Amino acid sequence: MPADPAIPPLQEAKRALRRSAKAARASAAAADRQAGGTGAAVLRDHFLAAVPLAEGVVVSAYWPMGDEIDPRPLMDALAGRGHRLALPAIRAAGQPLDFRAWRPGDALQPAGFGTREPLSGAEELRPGLLLVPLLAFDGAGYRLGYGGGFYDRSLALLRKAGDTLAVGLAYAGQQVAAVPREVTDQPLDLVVTERGVVTPGAPED
Image 1 (cartoon, helix red, strand yellow):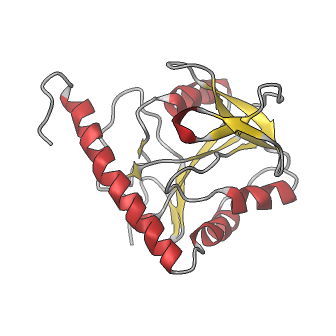
Image 2: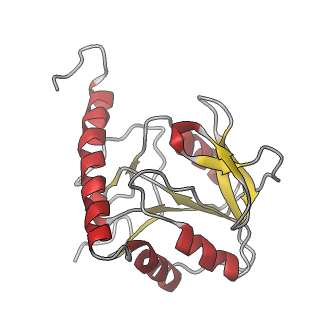
């Protein structure tokens, strides 16, 4: 597809990468299903072995959609260790996310982008750990999302208010050489995949 001259070059680069990243993620998800669908459980084990969490830290995850790697095995494990869980809720376009309390089995309502979120009356929480979905990520910890900017705005506010650990969850096949970035893009602290933990800035094996 030719570049649109009305779109700035950085946004055009992101748009092009979204197309290839969606295909790469779909391929990784299909390979996982063909191998028995164990990727999410293996990712959970990598996370629990590598990411220490203080007692009582609130964890916000996400409800999976499409080919996103499923965070629910990890969510169940964290709930079993006594952590309160939250899921993001879309407030409005151009705004940061709200984070509403959720427990396995709680009802959900449809939300934007085809995902689901807790009911509007659920308690709002401030997460100390944010589990983040993505289309692509790089070795510097930058992620490519869907273009709404919700997580970047939310992370900027959370980090300004205090310590918040942002961990991307992905298939290893979603890693790219470099994600086009702008000043508002918030880097992840870690990325966990079915193959292990990617620490931004660490030398690759």
